Image (cartoon, rainbow, N blue to C red; front, side):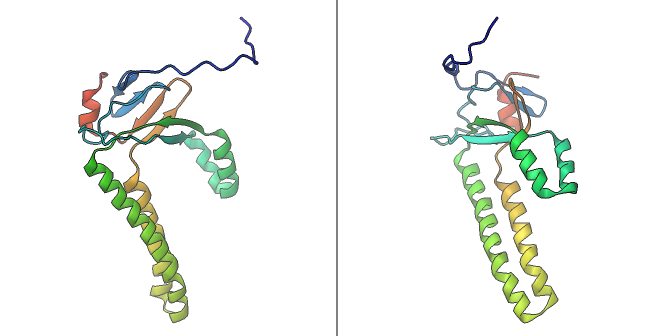
Length: 176
C-alpha cells in the first residue's frame, strides 16, 4: 500500500460526547477525536457551557533526568519530544469557581513575592529576604496544582490517559 504525501488530510471523525471514553482503574482513557460527556469531571454534575478546550502535553518521565544536566537543555528537549492533544474537560459552577480561586492565589502570590524581594533586601533582614522568594514559589505551586483540572499520565497516537477525574464521573463511564 503506498501513501500519497500530497493527498489532503482526512477530516477528523466526529463522535458523540462520551463515545470513545472509558475508565481503567483511576484513569480516564480517551481516543483522540473523542469528546468527554458534558458533565463535571470532578463531581459528575452538569458542566457549564461553553466547555473550553485545552492542550495537554506529556513526555516520558525519564527525560526529567536532563534537569540534572541543564534545565535549559531539558526545556528544549521537552518541547521537541512532547506529545500534545486537545481535550475539553467540563467543570460545574462550583469547581470552576474553585479553579479561579486557585489561579488568583497563584498570580497574586507571584506578584506579591516580587514586591517582597526588594523590601527584604532594603531592610537587610534575613527573614524578609527569604520571605519574597518563599511566597513566590509556594503561591506558584498552590496555583498550578490547585487549578489543574486533569493531568495526562500518557499520551500516544491512539490513546490519551488522564488522571484527576472524580470517582462519580469515572463511575458513570463504562470500563473496569
